[in-house]
Length: 252
Image 1: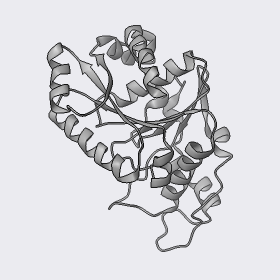
Image 2: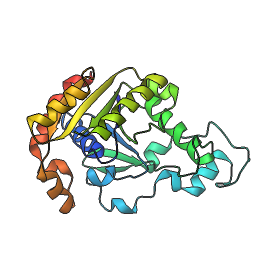
Image 3: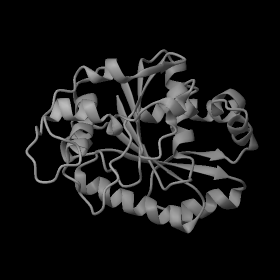
Image 4: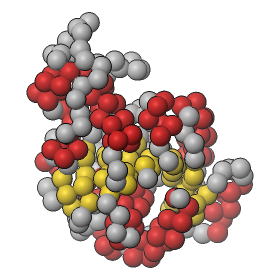
């Protein structure tokens, strides 16, 4: 099972991904968690100790140059488009509470569609993980689905988009749905987050009438308390964890 999680920044995408990963782990699943958002904080949300010291793969200059046979930052050079990556999930993952975590990082370059050694290594690694690995893989993506090429996207079993009550979040959900259709994602589901009242849920249902919702998660200060205490959200907010457990039936 390969699942990508996306959504506008600030909607609670990574927090939901952490709850989903924990729910699957509690079911006895072998889970590989991939932080593919340039603003990486999934490892922290999963309780990885000293997560701030993890070097994202996109910043591992020596590794990138070794695998692509190109100097990072050089312009117009030749490099391998299919670098060896099959050993990297074991070498570069860290473990927390029985879950393996990999931090990809991002390629922050001017312009769109960077074809550079860093991006090629990341996309090749993501493709390998989705196409060849046999465990449950959860990818915490940025809203633009930057790391998903067409072949990879078509092999993802499900894309889950997290949305909060708000027009900008809803607009992003529409954009992601269009992007997902363009690159061949087969199954799309949505999760409403930060729901304070019945009015919030009604707003999302009215604005997104033909969007399949897996469920709605309440706004809770327990998640804020967990963050302040440096704990994973599921250690403080057991109610939300139970709600996410109930969503697992929609993943088959």
